[in-house]
Length: 514
Image (cartoon, rainbow, N blue to C red; front, side, top):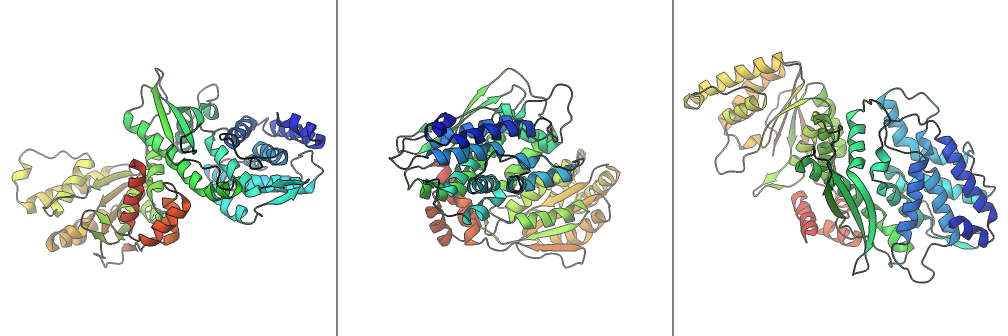
């Protein structure tokens, strides 16, 4: 349809270029190097181009606001070429190299167009530059920098072109290519890394994506899922959370460009609707390792910030360190700076890294926990059976017996163990001293043990403990987080007036349930 409109408008060269771009994209992907990634080939590009059209026409716009023929050409062309940077000229023979290619591919897609390595069939450098910039901007990590360098409007071939708006539509359309066509397994046995398998499972979970116009004029995204019979409800909910939160993040990211580009006449609802049905088949990708990846993605997404701290802490955990996560924690579970969200993300990531997490859950009760409580939780999570009559022993006997059994169990285990406990400053003075000066030193000498504890203030001054103080969350970070759930301007206002981490979370929950 766009080709006919180009021809009828006198832009035969652009109709030819679009045909050439499609042909070159199919040729470019004739041999996909990194098959274990979900589909980034010409078929994905075809679907993204279709979603761009559907999204732009999800609502009837006032005269002059709809995309004109040049804008539609640019959007279609960019949809075709946005992922060509995923084909590396070098041998990709390790997960680290593959991830490097994936992270840099939006920028490389632009370079391939700019230096004409990829032949677009265009003799118009202005249009070629626009296509390259659009391709560059589809990456989440690149979007804001690239878009902020664009003019809100420019004139190309006597037509108004809103490049920031086109960037927003492309990024969202790319994210919306969710369904199972993007993860059709190759014939024969495959051995996917857990991270790739989790992404494949996510796409195989989605059967359709559609748009509906709501009574208030907003455009609603509707996701239809297909739950296999070997998937429990908890995993289905986790996959749904992963999908919906990522879409909400993207909607918040592009809202400004869509609002400005369409002069406020087009708004995408944050309330993504999910319709779930069950199917009789099973899915072989459902494994403990894949479930751990899904849970980790959700734990990281739950952070308002602290992602750089998370990466630093994880390096220490992986080599067997001892860490104290420090941040104020008030009454009624008021996590002032996000200390407990960070701890949860650390433990979820540790599971993905192949470590065995042994945790003591924080007790929200009037009774003060003891060192014996923590030792008992660690022992039970490590698979140590508590003998009959143990509860009748003195606390000293319980401590000694549990510590000995725990040291023996962990020392003999093939895994790397990550032991954790929350709010250890709730322990009595004697219990805390015993935990830090007796229990932890005996566990820390084991080469396969890391310890991560949280508290309001530093509890260990020994050199082998690394203290990680968690400070307040910036207003900018609070605003970005809240923009998942409310309009950007409202999010900025709430962020300016709501400093406490847990209060920001409560605002988000109110928006979700309202």
